[in-house]
Length: 377
Ligand code: FA5
Image 1 (cartoon, rainbow, N blue to C red):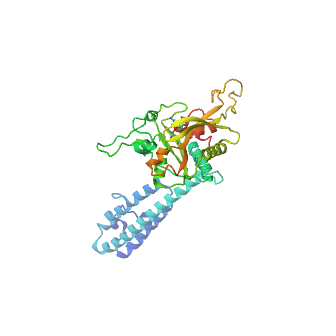
Image 2: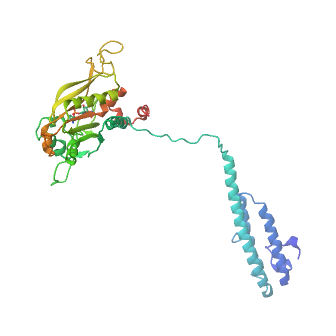
Image 3: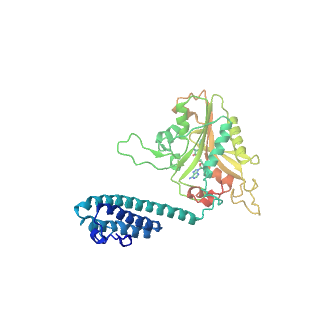
């Protein structure tokens, strides 16, 4: 047997193998050839060719050994050839698989190396959001009132006409309802009561007094809704902070003192305040509360001369409605109107924010334009 001539394309007889002890060297020779070839395989295309050359079903070397050596082998050689072939097949299959894994992980490493990771570069920073200006203003207002003994409560945005109107001394067909026409919910027939989006935070006066006995000192931040056409100072959804203080001896002086304290804390000590008579069915007397114009300092004249466009030359800007709680309201919550007194106010937060931060269009609060929002981090 001449090892230089060993090929699986020839039969054992052609190779001169006639004795069982000649079989093992035959397989050893094939196996060492396989080992040599496999060390030369370094990439996937070469590996595939190598795999097919050895394991290909029709003309792979193992298939040739089966066809040319095993099948025609005389009975006395068959057992040795079968054993040699099985051992060779196991070896070839496992080596080809481990070669594949080595090539794959090598490829990964070289891909990583190609990426040139520069660990000194700054990481990816994700921008952190901030509170919306309206939320910030809510917080400022809450902090001021909490510091003088008020608690913060919240209430439902969907209300019944009873809480939104009747218990606030606004009976059906009262003309004041026309100013607060709002969005009613479509309900199934037979619903026990109509429901509407609250037009102000004042219903929480009633809900709070129903729940607790005097003394009461609460503020109520929240969203309210009205069927107002949008313009620079109106939106159909806006924000209010309601305030309510009821106790056995609360006077008009407590009321004005509290409001003036708040306004000076919020706008700064330089602003002046004034009350004007007004009307709300649930307060008596009722007032509108004004501050001296923060744009022209109360002079009514713009910085460059001419009339101040913000206060229209008046020197004052209307801030919110308020008053002493009307005794009729106490009747709805089982408070004794002879023993208690109190005050209430309802501020439009969007307009307060506009004044303080000199914003001339309320709509920017609802447009979520980050160029605007970023100015108030
Ligand atoms: C009320 O809503 C009363 N509930 C306030 C009140 C409470 C009075 C307690 C007495 C006692 P008024 O309708 O004026 O009142 O609204 C209060 C504030 O909401 C206004 O001063 C204004 O700043 C703001 N406001 C009203 N309508 C709009 C609107 N469409 N868009 C933005 N702000 C508004």
